Length: 468
Image (cartoon, rainbow, N blue to C red):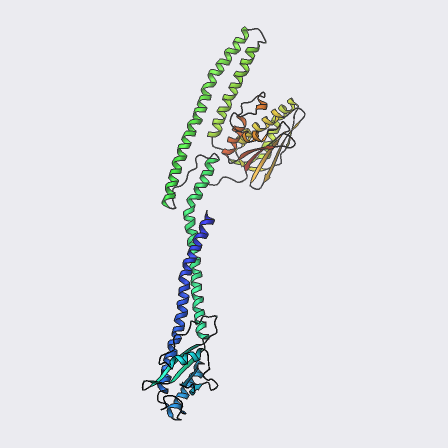
């Protein structure tokens, strides 16, 4: 969610900064040019004042009088060009130069300078030049009329290079760009903080949901931080989790109490059946069948009680050598396997993990019991211990009949047993107990085929300790 929300916020903030920065950059460029244009207008007005009384010929066709004013005007234009590098000149209406600098410069027949000259002849200053951008090598042309007795007798024209103006504009743009970049960094930092603040309750809620789904029903969401809506969601989630935990606790208590209360009457009933069997002929099939069913019912009640305790008891996690533990269980089950004619082999190198030794032993017992129970005579059951990254595994493989895909999807469900193995002793709760015992310590159990036939059961336990 953060990967979708963060780019959206960054794009929106970048659009806002561009919407502010681009007009500011354009305004800066316009201000720089306007400043130059105003300076040129002042300069042309000053030269026009000097040129106003240089000639008595309004149309400019007569030659210029060599007088003191003309010499002053020429000197001013030369100094102006020498100091500022700006070409400037005063031209009669006919285009003949009254005075100009540099000496090689003259009024062109066409172009921007000529257009400004022709416009000034209409007794108005030339229009504002087109905007010059930093990447354009263009000059600024400004022309002002020289008016005497209400008539335009000459025109002052300045042709200014724009290198310095473009440099100042570019420098201003760089400052704006740096400011935009800094603002963008601040905006990204703010977006990161904002998305973190908004999504932190969602991440906590997701983690807590996963904890509850894996059996840690005590997990709750701290209803602090984040928007008010998410805080309300956290409180609602905690209320729901409390209700679910209460319901499950009542269910476990009912199963445990019912199993415990039924054991005493069932034990008394089995005892009476045992006494009754002494009064009947030896080998009575009906009594034997009733006794077998009674013992099976007693086993189911014991397994139900074990399952309720497994789901209720907190795991006692500690650093455990699961290789040594698996080797002990292989040795304990070896006589049972030998009695059935099954070879029980173990490859159990030292491997540490974070587990509850009692719970892991019980789970491994249930898996080995199943493997030995369903493996035909002269076949092999193998127990292998290994570590892979952050988990350690105990893999139990057998060469029994195996399970179909549909049966693999259901194995581990409470009271479920394959229809093909109903004649084999069992309650269908052993693997459910194993799953509950492993889940309490952060472990898991998985089932798969063992080619060419048989079942592969993998018990996984974490190698790192639980986080606070």
